[in-house]
Amino acid sequence: MDTKLPEELAAIEADLCLAIDTIAEGDERRAHIMLDKCNARLRLLVAGEHRREALRLWAQSLVIAEEWDLALVKYEQILSIEASDEDALWQTIQILLRPKENPEAARRLLQERLLPLHATPEYEDALREAEASMGIERSEGRKLPTP
Image (cartoon, rainbow, N blue to C red; front, side, top):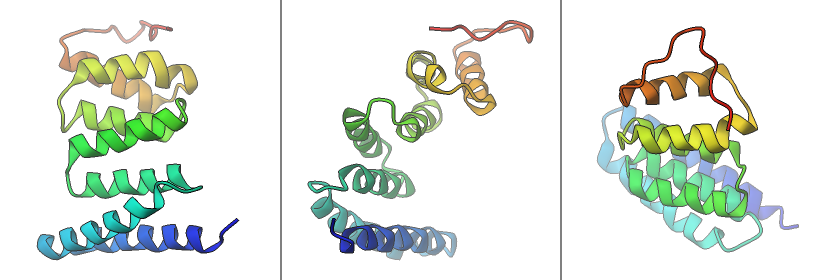
């Protein structure tokens, strides 16, 4: 196994953190240049042995840049590799629920894919949020539906 590749992914992850800090400092132009450079490096890595890790970092980069549709594509690619990737499902739901304002799709993913994998209070809260956005009321005592 090539040990240089995980080091490259770690370096890209550090650069993404630096881009977030740069945005926080108010220099969005410089941050976007940094993100573009990260994406160019990741583009070369997604064909290799660490495809899923590279796609995850690329999706995170796109989220930082608020490129929601492209981030969703990257998370879909991760899910095509591993359909039960909990983080990719959760990140997809977060994008659908908030920036994309698509509670129906978020609810469907929660009910059909994420909650059956691992029911957490955070995931259940997201389901309630999606349902509230759709106008579905749930009494406190009512259990969450099981698929």
